[in-house]
Length: 105
Image 1 (tube, rainbow, N blue to C red):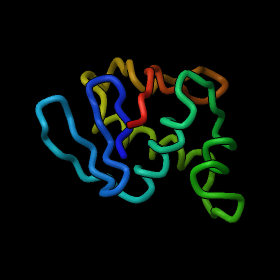
Image 2 (image 1 turned 120 degrees about the vertical axis):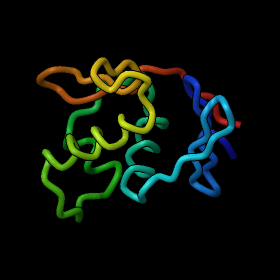
Image 3 (image 1 turned 90 degrees about the horizontal axis):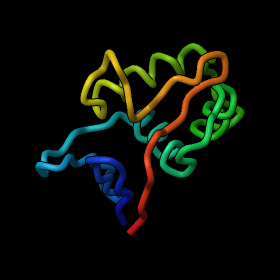
Image 4 (image 1 turned 90 degrees about the vertical axis):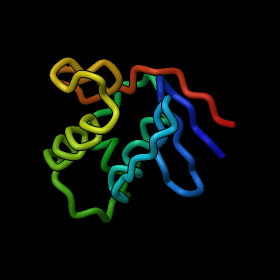
């Protein structure tokens, strides 16, 4: 199974992130889980608590600011311009949103 969004394709089985030139990128487990949450909720504002719950579950020992660090790491992999993120956008005072349509195949 694949999740296709923007110029990316995520191979759900192997957890490989593949760009438009067929170059593969390795995601950490946490990055994969966070990206999966965004892909399951495209174009939906998600606050830090929601992201924590959906990515790790209530038992997670993460602080809400650790989500910010994880989003930053994920942006370094998927954004064309890290200084002007267009794919994973910050919703000031609220959280984040994946600004993309997602196709599951």
